[in-house]
Structure formats: C-alpha cells, structure tokens
Image (cartoon, rainbow over all chains, first blue to last red; front, side, top):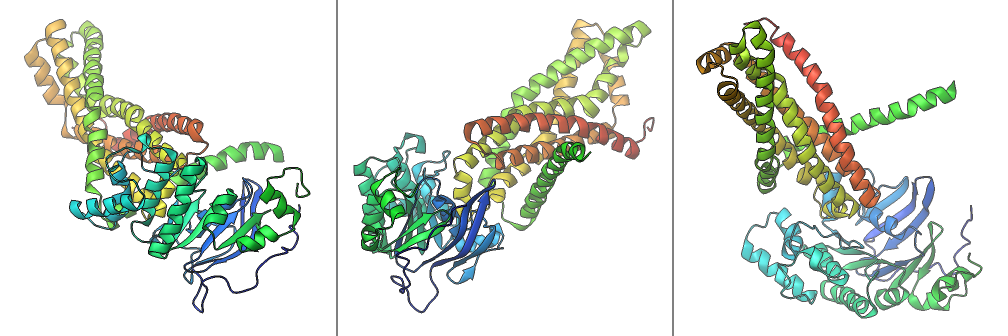
Length: 269
Length: 264
C-alpha cells in the first residue's frame, strides 16, 4: 500500500474565517472501506464558518464519499465528524435531521424528485417544515428561481430540464431553508464551459448574499480556482494538500503537478 | 468440512440477514405510524394506486375464478346428485382461500413490483439520499403511506373479489349449468359463516403487510443502477408471491385452531 508522503504545503496557519468558536465542519482521522477498497485512510480536515473550500482529487479518490460523510449520509468505519461542535457519529437518522437542516447538499445529478414539478421540488423542504400557504410557497419558490436565473420555470418537470438547470433547481431546493453550509458534489461535471461558469458565479453569489459556508467537491480545476478560498487535495485517501489556490499553483510536488497539468504518465502514477 | 459449512452457511446467513432487514423495516414503520404525523396526501395517493387502480385486475380475477370453480364443482358434484351444493363450495372456498391468495398474487405483481421499482429508482438516482439530506426520514415518507394504504386496501380488494366471484359463480350455475337458484342461494347462505369471511379478510391484511414490506425493502436496498432496479423488482414479486403462498398455509392451520374444522 502506497503511503502518501508528507504534504509539502499542509497549512498549519489558522484557516480563513476561523475564530475562537468551533469550525463549521471538522473531520478527524476519518476512515472508510467500501467492498474491501480503502477509500478514506485517515482524513483530517476543518472547514471554518463562511469560507469556501474546494476538495479536489482524481476520479474515484473518494471526494463524494467524503462529502456524504459530512452530512451523515454515510457512516465512517472510524474517526469523528463534528458539525458546529457536535459529533454526529452514532446519531440515528432522526437525530441527524437537526444537523441536516443546517447543511444543504447539491447532488451530482441534482437528485430532483422526478414525480414533482420544479416548484414542487424547490418548495419540498418548506412543505416538510410545515408551510402550507400556497401564496407563501409560490413567492419563495419564485424568489429562489430568480436567484438561480430560472424565472418562469415553476411548472416544468425535471425530465424536461437540462443538466445545468437540474443542478440549479437542486441547489435552490438545498438552500431554500437557508442552511449555514452548502455542500456541492461536482457542481460543474458534465456541463459546457459557459454553463459551468454560470454555476461557479452562482456559488460565489450565494456565498456573498447569504454568507453560507461552502464545500465544493470537484475535479474541475477552473471551478476550484474560481470559487475557493482554500483548496484541499485528496490523494490516496488522505488530505495531501491544504492551502490557498496560489500555494497550490506554486507547489512543485509531483503528484500535485501531475494533477494540475492533467499528466497521466508523471511520477505520481 | 469447513468448505461445506461455508457453502451452506453463507446463503443461510444472508437469508437470515434478509429476514432481519424486513422485520426491522416493519418495526420501524409501525413505530413511525404510532409516533409521527401521517402524510395524508401521500396516503390517499397510495390508496388510489393500491386499491382503486387494482379494481379491474381483482374483478377479472374474482369473476373468472368464481365462474370456473362453479363449473368444475358442478361437474363433480352433479355425479353425486349434489349440484345445488355448488354455491356453498364456491362461496366457502373463495372466502377462505381463493380470493385472498389470488388477490394477493395479483397485487404482488401489480403493486409490489411498482413499489419496488419506484423506490429502487429513487435509490439509484440519489433521490432517497436527497430525502435524507432534507431531513426527511425515507421510512416516514415512502414506506408508511404505502404500508397503511396496503393494510386498508387489501381487505377491501379481497372482499370485492369474494363478492364478484360468488356473483360470477351464481350466474354460471343458473344460466349455464341449470342449477336451481333458490337451492344454490339457500345452501350458500347456510354453509358460509362469518368466520369464513373473517379468515379471508385477516389473511388479506397479513398478505398486504408481507407484500408491502418485502417490496419496499427490495426497493430501499437496490444498487447497481438500472440492472439493480430490474433485479429488485423481479425479486420483490417472486419473494412476495412465495411468502404469500407459504404464509397462507400457516395462517390456515392457525385459523383451524381458532375455528376447528367441523365447528358450526
């Protein structure tokens, strides 16, 4: 088994936006094995309130698995997950409900409910929270669609939406209850560069407008550089690099260089 | 020897685990029914899906089962000069065995498959993860309305199947087999007791529970994309049908203890 060498750029400085209070999300020695394959081999990572962290890594590196752990959708074999100072390991599905109201997630394919319209999807969290007034629901959905630049699409079914639109609707659904943190699973995967750029702008706008903490899992380096205050590189099941976009670009580490330049025959292989 | 036990033990353990998962799902569902608010709209949608839209299938099943059973019984009983007893045999058989079992098999094929496929598709497209991420417990949202709808609908469907079967049997007996209608009805009413109806409806309730939990469990544990959904749907129908047939035997024996044979 290849052990990752010590990161040349692991940051020991206080992270952006951190203060004396506990971080928004903290992962400690997280380990996960799926079907005999060690996906996470001891991930340590902190995400401070208000910052945007991009987690990059090769396909199959375990980025999405890591993201799902942050909201309790997957349970680690070992390690701790702290959300706003609360360890969520061992909580049952109902207890996790309170945590999940604080942390929204945008799934890779949008994960829209295909039996509901766009309006039904976006209003779903509000309905579940007990809001029944159709006028209130309609106005909040319209407001979210305006933020997503998708006005007038309320009555469409998910099957008639493009990939980018599905992601926007998924995002609107994730943030309509104003969570403190949003997790994005490959927000630009499968989108053309123009639509991908519009999603990146949307992520930045949401952070500015609502002050949400954001965690963006991606292997799209342009997206990572565009949106992130800090970038973490997941390699061989561990956080191999943790620093700013500038630090990442200046790194001479062969694994990082291979990833940044998209080389498959470098020393990292 | 070790290999023998491994070969035998692995499927056995996996079967026990499967049964355990169904029992845990059922326990979770019943806990949720009694402790959490019911989503009435979803429940009523499922009543329409399970009950209302199964009408045609159940009516056709009941009608032709009653008709053919009436004819076959007449062909045999007529040799003994007991043609007028056909009504009683058809009615008791439909109430006790034919209507609950055949309705359950039809519902397993129609509704069980749909439940498994729908929930399975939601699973592989991350819609169930989306529910969980939105702080909605999938059992509350997906299983509870289906389970309650099945518990309400199945006894009603079986009652309908019995009624249609008896009516069809009567029509065949009167118009095609020339049995005297008065004797037919008199014998039927004399030999069909409330316990026969209780047995049929109780079986229907039990079969409904079996179908809904087997199908939902298959849906919730679906993986491997479209192939997985197909496999889960097939397994849901096969396992539900087998469970209905096996459970039917034990329910019959149990009811025989409560209402011993020959008891009037």
